[in-house]
Image (cartoon, rainbow, N blue to C red):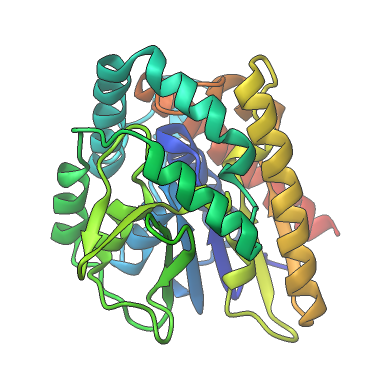
Length: 311
């Protein structure tokens, strides 16, 4: 049976996570002859927010060219929003150098999944202690705005309030009013690399500071099928920070999936397979690898579709 989710949850993972998710979704579409733009709901965190906004704007997932999809010539270049994110990230890392890595290491144990009130307080305290970077994601915001993406009741974009440390889900009922462009920029604002995004007088940072997927906010009840793509679930554990992020990412996704299953939803979660993880490496902002990761993700999407049909 074709794999057609009701809710699509797209996690954080930098430029290469964005490329991998685009590849997987386009592979699923081509194998199953479905249209992922027609999902009832989308939940996007960080890079996943870029992909979700892309779909909400009526654009199909990016595809590699036919040769690269089968392991041949390099595929097409990454889309402009992802390129902007990668360029900004590379510039910020060069400017902040070792300090950025130290901040990441300090923040890693809290970065994904401390959802209790005490966790929010600790998160807020850390966020307030971080120096305010000068780099912004204005270029990314401009390009998302130009796409025409609008909150239409289907889209959820996660971010974290820098002052309170609590998660905010833009696009959900009772959430602060925001444009999709502002919400996506906020959701992508890694706090040790980019300046916070101000929306209605409050400052917001990356939704991945709360959870890598934020799957638990998916509007999914009994009988719903949820597909979650989690780019950080399969990171090779070659560095201490990466190892921590991978473990916590997997743990948070497991707990969040359990919450959805208790509501009666069916949940399928996928991270990069071995081939994709090898292509991605540990630097998820390395846009030089985006073409290869897009093609590898496409092939994984074809494999997932074949596996679900066989099941």
